[in-house]
Every structure is written in structure tokens, then in C-alpha cells.
Image (cartoon, rainbow, N blue to C red; front, side, top):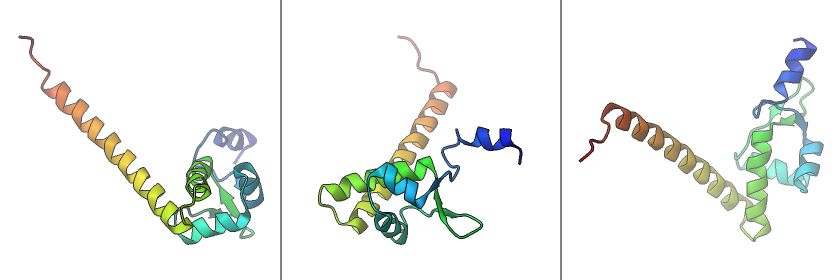
Length: 112
């Protein structure tokens, strides 16, 4: 991989660019919180060659949403389940919108 390849990956939401310490700092939380949401299977960080956890920007957004729920009194396990369900709902809505657009392009409404 060249330096240009590495630089281009910084725009990739799924590129695991952040260490656990940096991720916790960015979220204003503890490394223990990141471990807890990992154990609850909300996010699964990639591991570096040395075995260290690495997080992507997408994973940090998910973790931030879970932290928001926990800060409002939701238990970690419940917060993780809520975030998973929100993510699934968003994906289902995206797919439905695609189907709707495809159906409308095949059968455009007629003018009265």
C-alpha cells in the first residue's frame, strides 16, 4: 500500500483509523465503555497486527448514539439493542424508498 492509498482511506467511514484510547477520548467516554458495547456486540472493532482494537468513524457514530442513551439512564445492553434496531429500521426504510422509486419509474402516474 502506498502513502496515497493510506491517505485516500481517511475518507472511508469504515476504515479503522482510531485506537481505543483515541476513540474513547473523542467520545468523551472510557475504554471500558467501548469494551462493554463490544461485548454487547453493538460494534466489533478490527484488530491491528499487535492485537489492539481499531475503530472506524462509522463505529464511533454508533458508539456515540449508545453513549447518548446511556447518559440518559438506559442500561448499556438496552442502549445497544436500541441502536441496532434503529440501524435496521433506517436500512429497511432506505430499501423501501429504493423499491418505491423503481416502481414509480416503471409505472409513472398518469395525468388526469
